[in-house]
Image 1 (cartoon, rainbow, N blue to C red):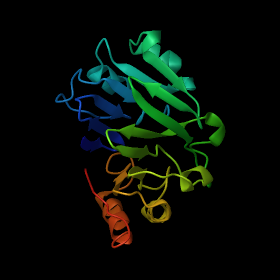
Image 2: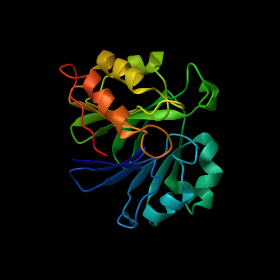
Image 3: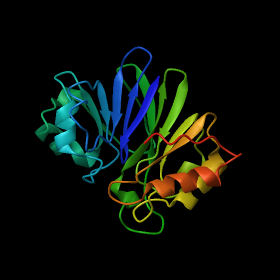
Length: 211
C-alpha cells in the first residue's frame, strides 16, 4: 500500500492491487489526472469538496462517496447516479469490494462543523490495514472509541483540533502502526503544528509527516 498526503487533507492511497483511492482531493497538480477508482469526501467545505480537483482525477468509471448534502454537486461534477454512494454517520458500507464505516465528524467547542450536518470521517480497510481518516473534527466520544492501524487527523486548529488536541486523541486511541497530521499549510496551520504534534507523541505513538 502506498500512502500520500498531497496537500491539506488530500490523501491518495494506492492499494496493493493497484486501486487508486482519494480522500478530499484539493489543490492537485497535473500529475494527478484521471487516475481515481474511488473518491471519498468528508464534507462540503470547498477545501474538501473541490469540483475542480474532483474533475481532474475522475474518469468515466470513478465512484464517489459523499455525505448526503453533496448529491446534486456530485451530479454537476459529471458522476452518474450509479457511481455515487451517499453515506450517513455511524453506518457500514462496501464499495468495489472495499468495506468501510462512517464516523460523525463535528466540532464540540465551535460551530464550523455541526453534528447535525451529518458530515463524516471514514474508517476503511485497505489491504491489511484499518485506516481512520478523521475529516474536520474535534475530539468526540465517537472518535475516542476508534480502533485502527493508521490515523489521519487534523492539527491546524481554528476549524478543527489543534496539534495538542490531536495528540491527545491519538495518545488515547493509539493506532497500531502510526498517525499522520493533516489540515495544515494551506488554509490554516503550519509545518510547525505538524512537528509539534509529532513531538508530543514521541515515545508514545509513531508519527509520520507525509507532507
